[in-house]
Length: 165
Image (cartoon, rainbow, N blue to C red; front, side):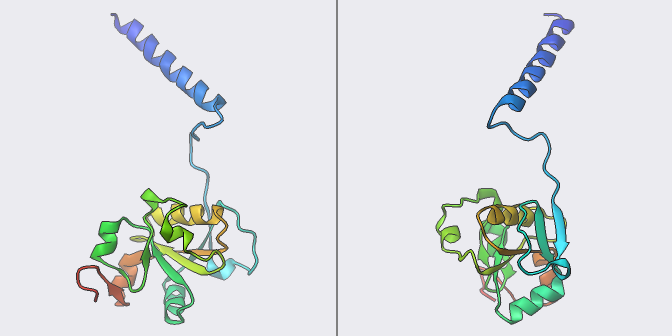
């Protein structure tokens, strides 16, 4: 088979794949939708919960909420990272294996306040888990961008499955 024929087959296959994907009702998006991030100080109560808008908080607000026991902290990292260390009292709902039918998710109160975090501001799993929870109707879900790394670096309470510090 000549190189020219092979190239025609590859290009034709790719074109047909894109065409099928764009016409299919279950087609995959070719790009991720833009996620708008609003920090807590810019959010008014009762604001519209757009699934492409993430409400975020910084360290100071996360600590204030933690100290007031005003919210449930959700670690969106995998169970191995969670076991090695997490914010004290946090529950683990790994984003990569998220299942809206799981007992952990079903037991959550959609009207409560949740703070979702992962490793830090360049970790996206907390953002994706937050969007999934918002699509399910959870009203008060925030992303703590500093995540576990910032929390631990500042000496705030952490625990692990091995030591339960």
